[in-house]
Image (spheres, rainbow, N blue to C red):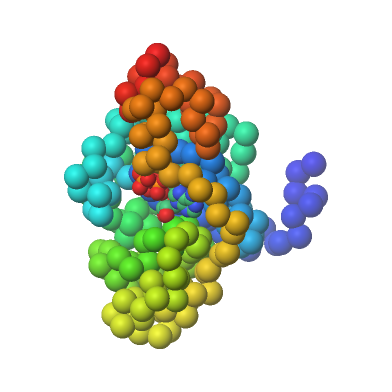
Length: 220
Ligand code: ATP
């Protein structure tokens, strides 16, 4: 039923969600966040971008990029508007979000002037002023901030002090309160390393992949 249900003219700016992270491994919390963000902000598309090396997790050695991409492909298989991009893995080294934001539209066949929404957990807020070219980044994207632990108003203060009220307000406009999904990649890796087999919060196909490849100390 091509084009019959989309009320926007063809020239309307497309809304693209950029969801960056380690995805080591991807879990139900990530999927829940993407679903809610897409719904609330009317995203046409969500692109999950696994980092080669997070600048803020320098000591963490994530699973190989090919495994994290393969797990994302399995987790996103049922969502036609979602995909994973290897743009940061291909670039290698530390993954600076501003570089990704500049390169992503062309890499995924979108117009340069598409609307970019940066999906992130509120635990990232305190460090946001330290992200490379933080001001340029926040001018280009609309952040979508998912509440996690802590007080988001207090977590925003360093950004307000560094970048001023206007950008802090822009970040606030992207706040999204969700019922918390208490799952993290850290907890999943720990459970697998303890030898647990039925780890909650991981899509079944991803868990099968982890076990088949013996990732995170899981036994095949
Ligand atoms: P780790 O435990 O290894 O630090 P993580 O589970 O936090 O990983 P990441 O891949 O680092 O997952 O997260 C990518 C993004 O998703 C981050 O912005 C993070 O805040 C957010 N996120 C991860 N898990 C959740 C969750 N359960 N609820 C809301 N946001 C989440």
